Length: 609
Image (tube, rainbow, N blue to C red; front, side):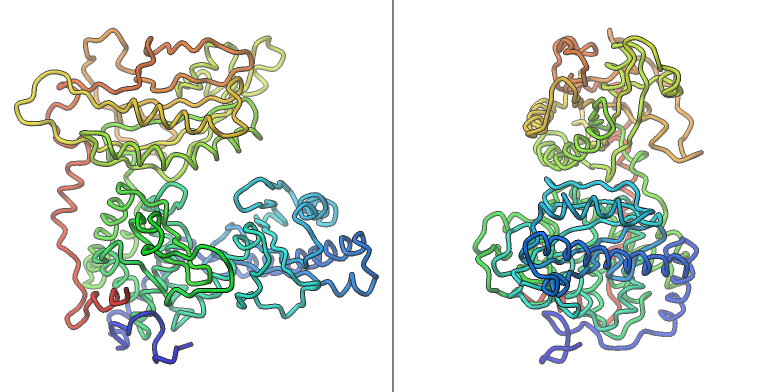
C-alpha cells in the first residue's frame, strides 16, 4: 500500500535502494540465528492455535445467541446477532513465538453487556471448552479481561460492544464511526486490534517487517528494556518503531532494517514524535495526542504515536532514567550490528542477556507480600504499576544520577512457622531454612502460615564523591520511598492487616541467588565488616509494613526509628567513582557514535512536525 504521495509515512524514504549483497547475506544469518534462538513456533503449534481460535469463535457466537434469547429476541434474530473474534498483539502481527499468548477481542452487538461477558461467557468457557484451564476474569482492570488456557495455549480475552444490532462475519474494524456511542473501555479494547491492522497497512513489505520486528523484540527482551509498565517500551511501541524504519527503507532486507533501526533510533531528536502517518481528527469527543494543546502530552520524553484514531502516545510511561538506558542500548546495538556487517561479530552477540544485576553497587528492593496466592497477584500488580512513580521521584534526589527499574518481579512462596519468620520474609530476608521448607512441613503446626511475596528491583547510579570530601556520605531517599508507600496504600482494596509493602536498599553483594542464572553469579568477595552496630548483611528499611494475620506492631527491627534513608560511608565507595556503573559508562563512551552509510541522512526521517 502506498499513499497518493507515492510513499508510506510522514516523510519520503531515506533510501529506496535495494540492499547490498552483504546485507542480504547477514539477513540470511540473522534468520538462522532467530531459529536457533527458538523464536518461531512449530507447524504443529501453529495449527493448534488455529484450531483453538476456531473453537473460541464458535463459543462467542453461542454466547451472543444465548444472551440474545434471554433479552427476548426471536430465534432467527438471535442467530443473526452474530459475534466475531479479532486477534491483536504479537499473534496478529505475526511475530509470536512458542508458548506466547493470543490476545483476542470478542466483538458483540449492543444488547450484550460487559456484565454478560463476565457472568455468562466466562462460565461458558469452563463448561463448553473441555480443556480450558485457569479461567480467570478481571472485570475491574483498566481494560477488563478474561485470561485462560485452552489446549495449553494462553489466551487473553477482551470485549467490545458495538452500537450495532448484529455483528456480521465480514465486519472490519477500520471505520472510525464504529467508535461512536461506545464507552471508554470498549474504545480501549478496540484500540489494540485497530492499531495492529493499521501498522500492517502502513509497512511496505510485511514479511521484511515481521522478520525485523522479531529480531528487535528478542533483543529488547534480552536487554531487559521491553516493559511499558516499568517505563520502557512495550510491544506496540517497538512495533511502531520498526514499522517506521521499514517506511524509510521500503526495499531493504531485514538485516539492513535492523542495522538502520539502531542508528536512527540512537540519533533521533526526542521529543520529536515517531509517526507512521499524520495524526487525524475523528468523530469522537475524545483526546487525540496533541502536545500543542495538552501540557501532559508535552511532557512525553520519547513520544511514539499509535497510527489508529484516536492517536495516543504508547510511551507516556518513559522517564528520564529509562530514556537514558534505552538510548545507551541503541548505541550498543548499533555497534554490534556494525561489526556483524563487517564480519567481526555474530548475531548471537546482539541477543546476549542483560547485565542488570552486575551493573550497580546499590539496589532498592520493593517487596510486596500477602497471605494468599489470589490476593498476591492483584497486590503485586498494583505495586508494580506504581514503581514508575518511585523511579520518577528518585530522579529528583541529589547525588542520584539514575534509577534503573528491572522489568519484572521475582515471586516466592515461603512457608513460615513463626511470626518472626513471617516478618523476615516480608522484609526480604528469606533464610535457606525457610526457602527449603515445603507446605507439607508446616501442616498442622500452630501459628504456621504461608507468605506470598514479589520482589522488584531498582538499580541506583550514584554521583562520584566530590574530590577531597571526607566523612560519611548520605543519600537521602526518605521522601520518594515514603511517598511511594503512601501511594500504593491508596489502592481501594489495600488491607493493612494482610498486605505488606517494604522498600529497602541492599548492596550488590547481598543480591539473592534467585536473580541470577545457574553459574552466572561471580564468587562473593570477602568484604571488610564496617564498624557499626548493625550486621553488614542487614540493610536500611524504608518501609516497615508486613502482612499480618493478626495486627503486629509497627516497629522496624532493622532501624528502630524507621528512618527511610541510606547512609554510605567513604569506605563503602572507596576506589570507585560511580559505583559499578562507571566502567560500563566508560565502555559506552568508547563506542563510536553510530552513523548511517554515506548518502543517507536520518534528518529526513524527522522532517514532519
